[in-house]
Image (cartoon, rainbow, N blue to C red; front, side, top):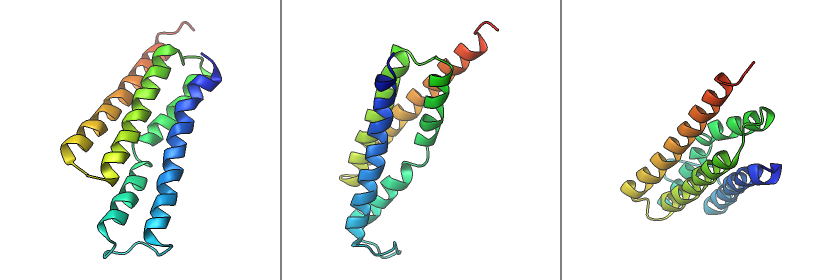
Length: 129
Protein backbone atom coordinates (compact mmCIF):
# COMPACT_ATOMS: atom_id res chain seq x y z
CA UNK A 1 0.00 0.00 0.00
CA UNK A 2 1.17 3.50 -0.71
CA UNK A 3 1.94 5.81 2.17
CA UNK A 4 -0.71 8.19 0.81
CA UNK A 5 -3.48 5.58 0.99
CA UNK A 6 -2.41 4.60 4.50
CA UNK A 7 -2.26 8.18 5.78
CA UNK A 8 -5.33 9.63 4.04
CA UNK A 9 -7.74 8.36 6.74
CA UNK A 10 -5.44 9.91 9.36
CA UNK A 11 -5.54 13.25 7.55
CA UNK A 12 -9.36 13.08 7.47
CA UNK A 13 -9.52 12.34 11.21
CA UNK A 14 -7.12 15.23 11.92
CA UNK A 15 -9.27 17.51 9.73
CA UNK A 16 -12.33 16.47 11.76
CA UNK A 17 -10.55 17.41 14.98
CA UNK A 18 -9.54 20.85 13.69
CA UNK A 19 -13.02 21.44 12.22
CA UNK A 20 -14.64 20.63 15.56
CA UNK A 21 -12.12 22.86 17.34
CA UNK A 22 -12.90 25.83 15.10
CA UNK A 23 -16.65 25.17 15.33
CA UNK A 24 -16.39 25.00 19.13
CA UNK A 25 -14.53 28.33 19.23
CA UNK A 26 -17.14 29.93 16.98
CA UNK A 27 -20.01 28.49 19.04
CA UNK A 28 -18.52 29.87 22.23
CA UNK A 29 -17.75 33.22 20.62
CA UNK A 30 -14.26 33.02 22.08
CA UNK A 31 -15.52 32.63 25.66
CA UNK A 32 -14.26 29.82 27.91
CA UNK A 33 -16.61 26.93 28.68
CA UNK A 34 -18.86 27.28 31.69
CA UNK A 35 -21.71 25.24 33.21
CA UNK A 36 -24.35 27.51 31.69
CA UNK A 37 -22.99 26.92 28.20
CA UNK A 38 -25.81 26.63 25.64
CA UNK A 39 -26.63 23.08 24.54
CA UNK A 40 -25.31 23.31 20.94
CA UNK A 41 -21.95 24.68 22.09
CA UNK A 42 -21.70 21.95 24.74
CA UNK A 43 -22.43 19.21 22.20
CA UNK A 44 -19.71 20.54 19.92
CA UNK A 45 -17.25 20.80 22.83
CA UNK A 46 -18.11 17.26 23.97
CA UNK A 47 -17.63 15.93 20.44
CA UNK A 48 -14.27 17.71 20.21
CA UNK A 49 -13.25 16.18 23.54
CA UNK A 50 -14.28 12.71 22.32
CA UNK A 51 -11.65 12.94 19.58
CA UNK A 52 -8.97 12.57 22.25
CA UNK A 53 -10.30 9.30 23.62
CA UNK A 54 -10.60 6.25 21.31
CA UNK A 55 -8.93 7.94 18.29
CA UNK A 56 -5.68 8.15 20.27
CA UNK A 57 -5.37 4.38 19.83
CA UNK A 58 -5.86 4.85 16.09
CA UNK A 59 -3.13 7.50 15.97
CA UNK A 60 -0.80 5.17 17.89
CA UNK A 61 -1.45 2.21 15.59
CA UNK A 62 -0.83 3.95 12.26
CA UNK A 63 2.91 4.65 12.67
CA UNK A 64 3.45 1.19 14.15
CA UNK A 65 1.77 -0.42 11.15
CA UNK A 66 3.81 1.72 8.76
CA UNK A 67 7.13 1.06 10.49
CA UNK A 68 6.53 -2.70 10.64
CA UNK A 69 5.12 -2.83 7.10
CA UNK A 70 1.87 -4.41 8.29
CA UNK A 71 -0.42 -1.84 6.66
CA UNK A 72 -2.15 -3.62 3.78
CA UNK A 73 -5.50 -3.28 2.00
CA UNK A 74 -7.39 -4.76 4.97
CA UNK A 75 -5.70 -2.27 7.29
CA UNK A 76 -6.60 0.69 5.05
CA UNK A 77 -10.22 -0.47 4.66
CA UNK A 78 -10.56 -0.81 8.43
CA UNK A 79 -8.95 2.63 8.86
CA UNK A 80 -11.61 4.12 6.60
CA UNK A 81 -14.40 2.32 8.45
CA UNK A 82 -13.06 3.71 11.73
CA UNK A 83 -12.67 7.27 10.42
CA UNK A 84 -16.05 7.30 8.68
CA UNK A 85 -17.66 6.04 11.89
CA UNK A 86 -15.96 8.92 13.76
CA UNK A 87 -17.23 11.44 11.19
CA UNK A 88 -20.77 10.08 11.44
CA UNK A 89 -20.53 9.91 15.25
CA UNK A 90 -19.46 13.57 15.39
CA UNK A 91 -22.27 14.48 13.01
CA UNK A 92 -24.91 12.81 15.18
CA UNK A 93 -23.30 14.10 18.38
CA UNK A 94 -23.36 17.73 17.26
CA UNK A 95 -26.86 17.69 15.73
CA UNK A 96 -29.65 15.35 16.84
CA UNK A 97 -27.51 13.62 19.50
CA UNK A 98 -29.76 10.55 19.31
CA UNK A 99 -28.17 8.03 21.65
CA UNK A 100 -29.11 4.86 19.72
CA UNK A 101 -27.53 6.19 16.52
CA UNK A 102 -24.56 7.72 18.27
CA UNK A 103 -23.99 4.58 20.34
CA UNK A 104 -24.12 2.32 17.30
CA UNK A 105 -21.59 4.50 15.45
CA UNK A 106 -19.33 4.61 18.51
CA UNK A 107 -19.50 0.82 18.83
CA UNK A 108 -18.72 0.35 15.12
CA UNK A 109 -15.62 2.50 15.52
CA UNK A 110 -14.46 0.80 18.72
CA UNK A 111 -14.96 -2.72 17.35
CA UNK A 112 -13.21 -1.80 14.09
CA UNK A 113 -10.26 -0.34 15.97
CA UNK A 114 -10.09 -3.35 18.31
CA UNK A 115 -10.00 -5.67 15.29
CA UNK A 116 -7.25 -3.53 13.75
CA UNK A 117 -5.17 -3.87 16.92
CA UNK A 118 -5.83 -7.63 17.15
CA UNK A 119 -4.87 -8.18 13.50
CA UNK A 120 -1.76 -6.06 13.96
CA UNK A 121 -0.73 -7.86 17.16
CA UNK A 122 -1.27 -11.31 15.62
CA UNK A 123 0.77 -10.35 12.54
CA UNK A 124 3.62 -9.09 14.73
CA UNK A 125 3.56 -12.03 17.13
CA UNK A 126 3.38 -14.64 14.36
CA UNK A 127 5.99 -13.00 12.14
CA UNK A 128 9.20 -14.97 11.70
CA UNK A 129 12.10 -13.72 13.79
